Length: 579
Image (cartoon, rainbow, N blue to C red; front, side, top):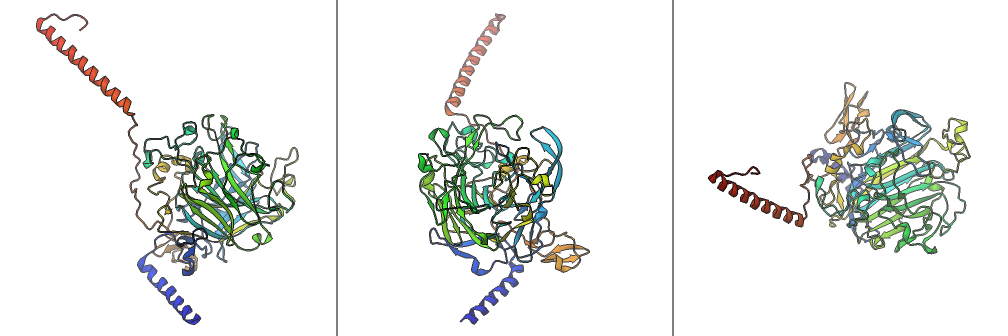
């Protein structure tokens, strides 16, 4: 029987290879994904889900530079994230740190290379030479591939050493209306998951349910935002006892988090860092935890306060708001840094939806839709894209530096004063991803593919505000994807293509400079074909419209009376001066 099954499988694979050039490629499923991995059963509802997206990363040498890949973009910019206490990111994101290797892995390298560039300093309001002493990678599918609801599964191996803090590897989802690291796109947009008209919050949520016009194809009375779901955020470090946690959770750990707005306001006695809700604080109910998991007592969210005049984005007092982080932490061990482990998120959107996190097939954390009733927020409905990155931030796993220690540079002995022992020796470090797969229940219309679904459009809003989603020197937010053109010496360097006069020429259905990636695209027609932007007429309340009609009628009657009087006087040639 086993021999027969093996023989049948070989025939299926051969037919697949033969028919592919005839049928053509469409959708987001990697041709390298085996048939056995094209279905899965949900741990949450026991239903069968179908594969709708996959990337196996089996072809070595892929480039993720802007314009080189139809699914991913490795950004090329500094991460300017900074806390109110001055703690900040230390890395420069560069596409050269992201590639695929011979083992079939996506690899994000973090190293100690310097980067200098000429840029705009929003705090000093001038252009100047800037520098970072660490280089790393962030790859994102923004405005290329998005999905809403379903099952996300990936195999990962974390970078660096498990017992040395400093690296911040992460896998997360963000609503397409905000682009990670582009602060002007996320201001007043992140992480709203709220569709009620609240006049007190209206100014803080740019796309509020109080809005009654439908500019940019947006729907009236629908609140929108850039919601965030964190599948993985790893905190390495020594396994010493941590305060306030449950189940003896310790470093290294990973956090699993839903970040949403609006958050519970301070006046309702929300928990602060270093406390737990049981001490009399107001927090969300119906949160469930698995084995070796604790509530995250170190982060309950962020208050986005009014900004000062020298900050890169503007936020007034009326636009300030509280965000909540509904978060848990799971103890890891050294094996997560030496071999692959499977992480899974099951997401059902909407008020009655849920978020369930699993690791190696075991349930770890859950947020149910009814848990969010406190602030009338909801499990995210936004079309969301994937982000994979490794950051370095003084706010994540770094010790408090001694007085006068401001330089962070492994190449300078004085620049290591604020780092953990062994951190510099752990670099370069490599975050490895074996595969990413997304499954959906095709009978559930709440689960969708695409960055511009009809119920939650994003396309025209982004087109109208493209400056928010790109750097100052970029002509547009995303470059068009190239088909061939990469340098080559022979056909082996051109994947699914051939080498012609030193440049790769791709076969049908393959893209990228070296023809290493299929022409990923939606396998359905865009409901909104036109790119031009239309604006609706301003909304006029009925009572104002009625008043305007009455005024118009009154003026018309008065004008008619004056005209009639003038005509009679003309007939008698007795016209007073005031007429």
